[in-house]
Length: 91
Image 1 (cartoon, rainbow, N blue to C red):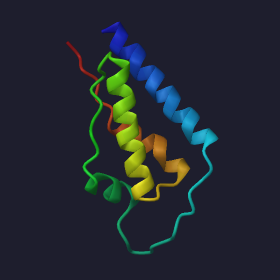
Image 2 (cartoon, one colour):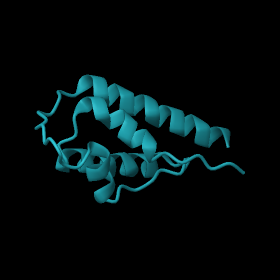
Image 3 (cartoon, rainbow, N blue to C red):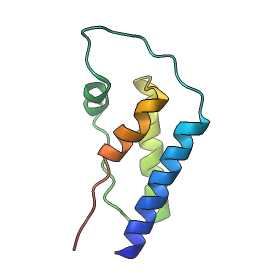
Image 4 (cartoon, helix red, strand yellow):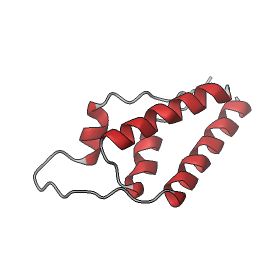
C-alpha cells in the first residue's frame, strides 16, 4: 500500500515537473466548442490505479502524453487532466 502511494506521489511530481519544463503548445480559442476536459475524455484515456510497477506507470504516462499531443493540450491543463485519471485503490 505504501509502495502504491509512493509511486503515485512520484508520478504526480513527475507530471508537475513536465508541466513546468515543456514549452506550451499554442492553443486555439474555439468559442462554443468542446472543453479541454470533454476532448480529453473523448480520447478514452486510461486510468492509473496506483500500480507499484514503474514500467506500468511509465506506460500510462506515455499514453496520457500521446493524448495531450493529439488534443493540443495547453501545459497549464495537463496536470489537472492527468490527476483526474488517478484512482487510489484502498484495501
